[in-house]
Length: 307
Image (cartoon, rainbow, N blue to C red):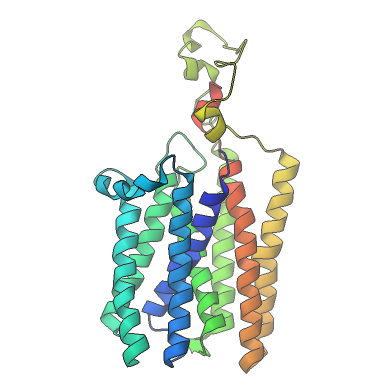
């Protein structure tokens, strides 16, 4: 699949934003002052909104994006839009009470967290539902999206807040656990992707053309003399060497670096620990951009068998 920059930016930033929204909604200790609370809400909501806006740049007619929510009964894209709007509206009310009255309404926060998780899940299902892309068509796709969103949210909240522990765990330790689980899930996803090929699913040029009953089918010429929408958006090739390098980059920046910084933060205190978590956030986001680029670039759509 063609790795569009707008979609990559969307999935990474909105995932981090909604993850941060979820952590705020769950009541993790954050700055209680008006300016501090406002800045935390601005960053969380800003990331989510920027990601959603960037996704419209990939549409042929961005001005018609609002129509997407009308098909929520059958479209995961529409469900994503509906969930995002509901979550952001709820978070708006939550933020107003927090910033102006210093009160964090727990029941409303829980609804925000549920809505944020639902939004990330619906985003992942846009891809996981596609049987025409075997590598995406697995329960591990939404699991990875949710795991990375939660991990981003934990690190953002830790870098932004003033909390030393949550649910009995120190923040750096919680970040270590979340990072380990998220990247372990991604490694399993990559392993499954090596087996979930079109050929393994029984698809080849013969099934793509419907001529397989005649024998082995080979393409003499391309179906079109020039480029079209399908060849631009659905067909993309990346060399194994380049893919391997990008995997290493994503693991170094998104896994090894944040894990090391969280480990150091466990033995630091105060501002030093918080600064290390800030660096861990930047490392994770950088690694996720490489991981998400590969997510699209390595995916083979069934239409590629024909083109």
